[in-house]
Length: 104
Image (cartoon, rainbow, N blue to C red; front, side, top):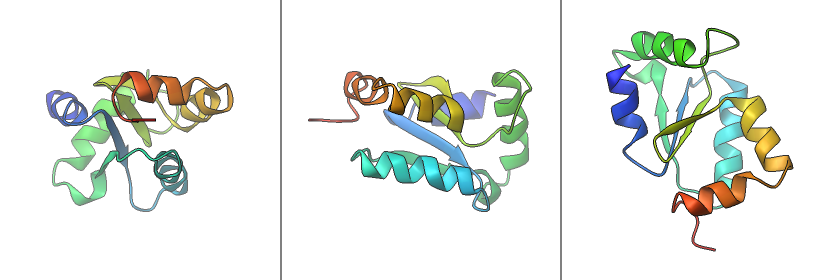
């Protein structure tokens, strides 16, 4: 979990993904579409990826998939459902602005 938190604090927006996950692609594409340069960390490219995936699952309460896992300002926001809900509700962009991830 320490490694996850260290990586999550490296940039305003960090997304943990798996290269084979279509929902991960959807969330990273959303970040690109709103002009956020998120740090995308693919767990299947990391030797400690499985360990980090278990830590993310635990942080998410043990329910649902561990990825994508989105952190904004070093805090876990959630996965696809939470991020899309925030976006559709008009809350994601202000959150990204407050984090310094958007300049507009």
